[in-house]
Length: 374
Image (cartoon, rainbow, N blue to C red; front, side):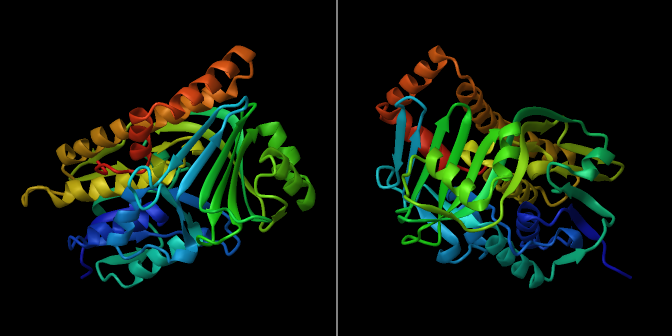
């Protein structure tokens, strides 16, 4: 007779696999539902900015990619649209890095290998019965809909365009970001400290996104060179272009019970934020870490479906989301306005923030994840 599962994780992305590995360390029997149709694409151009908390978590699972696929960010330069500028430096913070830019396929491969060698995890093709179901299916989660959970969504009427570039000049381990007339362009360093390749995330209005995606590769690269003010010299497109709509969203409920079993949401199935601060996956990994911690610390007689435990998780992660989501949404709204008064105020604010000393340091350390994951 098959051994029953303690936990069924619906969704085998980065957050789902990470959570499965964390739970398996506590000898919990985990079913990980993987959709074969969503296998990693060889030409995936996505890259994530991971902070120190996420780095430590993945290191503890021995799933951190090698240096060629996890580039250290030593500095961050941010430009406004009228003279505003902010710079962050890891050395000033006494840290090894501000963040790491990680190739998605490389990270998924390391997690996938770890899952294969973990006997407490069984990869399954369809959901199975378990004491606790964790929904990690992403923002378009079908299970969340089946559970009757509303997903409150606020569209930004923008799309994020992602691709890769080879640059004339090396990136110098600097992450660069430009705010200009409502658009947000980020160049994220790749291929190690001496690399001259960057991952691009360009948030633009929906109609402009369609026009940019229709450009020939050379013209698209030239548009990026203009938008980045030629900072890295001549640019060459080095990968396909992908795009997705941007919105802020949050599930109205993150936990629930069904008889003696329960369910909980994590990652993008519970929340999404604007990518301008690069905190989306950090939030999702924070969900996984705290849920695993709450279950690890439970009294021996408590079930993993105990709603008192799950409410601890829900309250703490909603608080974390409120801080990060509020900040990113506020910045997006501030830079989306094009009137001269707002433009002057926001760039004045950037210059003041650059000189703020302790405030700037506190913000940097929060973004770096130099605090508890809960």
